[in-house]
Picture 1 (cartoon, chains in turn cyan, green):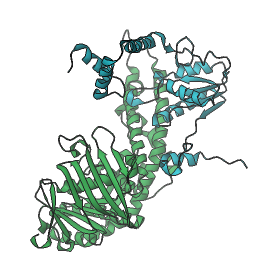
Picture 2 (cartoon, rainbow over the protein chains, first blue to last red; picture 1 turned 180 degrees about the vertical axis):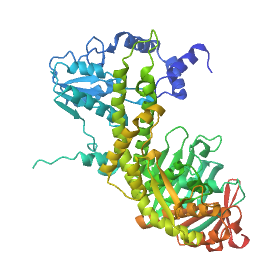
Picture 3 (cartoon, chains in turn brown, red; picture 1 turned 30 degrees about the horizontal axis):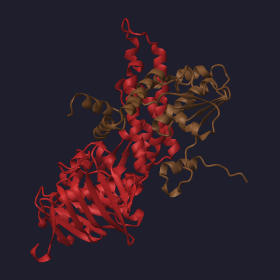
Picture 4 (spheres, one colour; picture 1 turned 60 degrees about the vertical axis):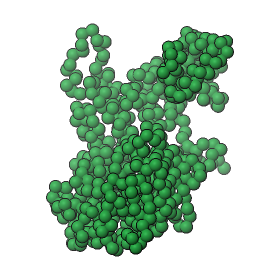
Length: 200
Length: 404
């Protein structure tokens, strides 16, 4: 145990995801030795992020304004919505530059073990966005694990009931640039199921 | 296949131990509590990623150590593969195959063992869980991909049970008449119930999807295993009994009867059956907050003629059954894969009468590699004479033939 402030810092750091007691200690001592201006910047960044960042009122992505940059960008396609679990998934898809529509961040996936049901996700808000009929395609991009798949099939039932024209799910399969032999059986099995006709 | 070398570090009572092995029979002798079983347990862990003695990994790591390491050199078709596992309780294990790190699951199949242990009596006398585990372990030994399916199925059952528990207040009939507490936000019970039902349907679909392929695999396995079991039972008990296995399903009655009769419907049909059976027990599931239908509620009925083994078989008959199941597993893997799994007989001879001892020894003597542990060498039938190692308080030494 260290004295007062140092121990407080270690404790706080240790509560962050992916940081164990040893790492927390290392970071704490790094900060102690660092230039005061650097530490000041970090502290400022921390307080700013809580003060300024909030969630977009339309898609629930992180945002600094009422609407995030993507939702307030008129060049983005209004007819397609891509549904993801977390804001970091938006960033991942944005990096591809493949998708020109808008997003909807659910804030998680259905997982009864963790006490998360559809009512804890932004599902109702998604249905509201779809009400005026502008959106013709919903792309479900939840994680390809059990909880993500359960969420996807829940959404597809709901969306079918409200009559969205096209509900699609991201494909699962082999990683590009990878070797077939390194794929696990489940992935390879999915890739087989989702195989495509080659254009002649 | 056989194991050419086994080494352990910080495993159970061992700081470290090296055990050079050869094809044929190797016997580990030593007083109780010296660490014989620990060595074969390590071998079993390499093959199945679990211990036959404990459900958690913590007891496997030597007291005071952070992690245990088990390494085996496995010879198959003249090629040697190094399999290594690092066991850290509470964290994911780390695995290496050859020199390269792999996911622990990828190690499955590199080493196959069939392990006989005193605990096997529980296969006959114990809970259904013991028999399900026997089947599923054998499935994985036969085709490692079932490890993933099994894991996914367990997760689905957990999720679905959690949902049933949490949705109880909205779904159960008793709750519907309960009035909301004054001051509490008045939920619309009808819509809450509808939404809970809606999500239950999703988990039903997941359970039926994965559950049907697991069920199908088990049924086929049992069908293949049956003849081997009947033969092994008769040989080990030296008689003509009618030892049978049949599947006891939690599905609705008509289907359960068909499965018990040995029918193996195709996956799509099982899928439909699971869904229909789930619908039939919905009210009960909601009342009890438990998942009542699916492979996790099934059992295997072991019977001698018309009588179930559990509750009717004598001690000796129960042992014959337990040995019969393991021997059948060995024969099945041998025939299936065209290669002998490593046979491990952990302290079983002490449990058996002389007749069963001799006959068991005769039946396993031709396996490519057999590992035997015994407290006293006299327990081991002469038919299984081979190299002997003496195990004393966590150290292993070869016994030269004439002073054994």
